[in-house]
Length: 148
Picture 1 (cartoon, rainbow, N blue to C red):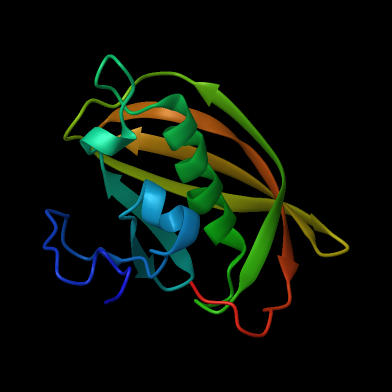
Picture 2 (spheres, rainbow, N blue to C red):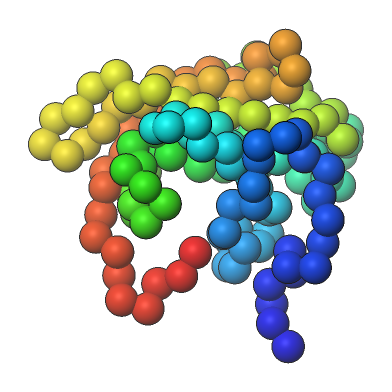
């Protein structure tokens, strides 16, 4: 038996999005997450499910920050095999996402010094901006035996 809980599920996602292959460990807890690649641009997304919500049935702030980390960090990826770590993540909460909302996020590199990248990012649902902020990320070497 596998612990890949997303393998046999179907998902209601917008066209162009594919399942992000991060569904073990912590990814299993916060997923499923999706991505859409357009050249070098990456947009990540997720549908707010019950396990993402707080007591008010809105996406929990911790989930939105986790998603911001994943969405904004992807701005420094050269390809799907790029690994990176978060140095700092600053988020400003502007609105909430309700159960069932489709949430998207993306970031843009605004600076790089000695392999440390600064990214400005935005998380949104439809026309509504949920979070804005800045992330600082570092590319690392892939470890032997590591999996998505």
